[in-house]
Image 1: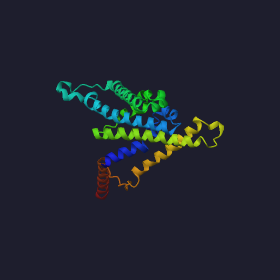
Image 2 (image 1 turned 120 degrees about the vertical axis):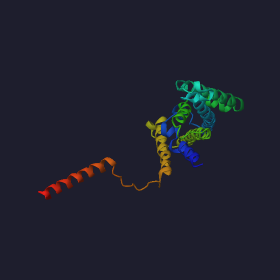
Image 3 (image 1 turned 30 degrees about the horizontal axis):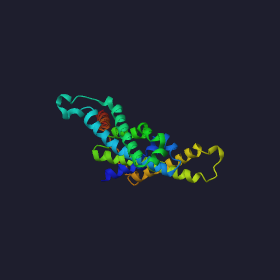
Image 4 (image 1 turned 45 degrees about the vertical axis):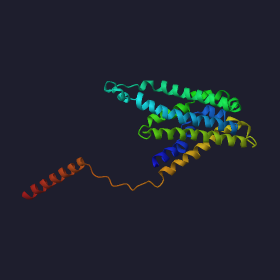
Length: 244
């Protein structure tokens, strides 16, 4: 259980897609002018991440990585299809985005119109593909299907929280006095940087209090042998002196 909580906490806060790796910045900056629009796009990203990351985890485990086809027979155990990673991952993401687009257009035409071109552009949103690639590169941490689901949900949730927070701030800034040179993207980038510092500070909650006293380093066997040889030579020299 602690493994799941640590992964979720990291994905939402200290390793947030926006603030730690700056993935998905284009839609993050363009659709964060209104809270209502940010909520819709954030929910779409959560939905797509929740589906694509576990699906791509299964593709990687049972088809792509070296030895993944062993379940088909021993003659396939040496096959390595990892060169197809990007093609299959992008195909999975594009399929899920099309599904989201159909659902949003059917049940919420106003949200579909407000999102405009940015909804189909989720298919090429680097945060979506980045989630699957991070999952693949962290096989030691995300080694089960359940952990891949947790990572998909939490990484999408972290992205949604980031865009929702920025949208709320930008709505307030609209009624504030901002110097002319900083209006628009200028103050938005400054706000994003300050938010990133705040989110990264949560990483201390995972490491605080875990420091241990360093144990004195033990001498290596080679050093001990050298000291033994020196002692033996010194003893031999002393014995020769006394015999003289």
